[in-house]
Image (cartoon, rainbow, N blue to C red; front, side, top):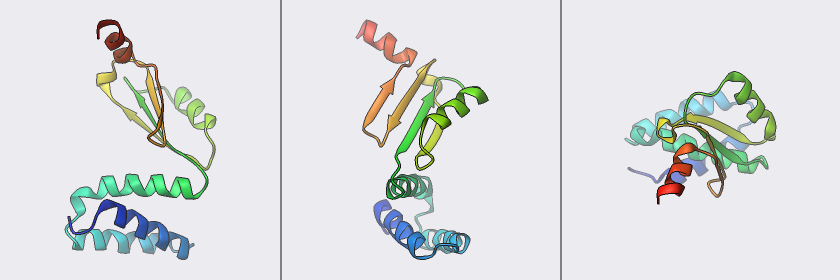
Length: 124
């Protein structure tokens, strides 16, 4: 990796603030730069960090909601409405959780109501 993920994310966030209204052009140039530097394999991590930084800069939070199985549209909408418009909310399905949900806010606060946690609590 030519540059650390943090450097890419910070550069993108700074450029996004300076180039309001030109986001499409910025994204294209950013992707070309990442590819040219040979760091394309880390693009998912880079975008996740960008999303986290942009949410914080808007005064929001980065929220990750993980489910044991795919939630219904109604549940997804209810959860989205529970958070501020400034927050970045992403949903993931992780079958190893078996059932329930796990909510992680800014990588620090956690609400875990998954079946796997309850099973582990009983036997460990």
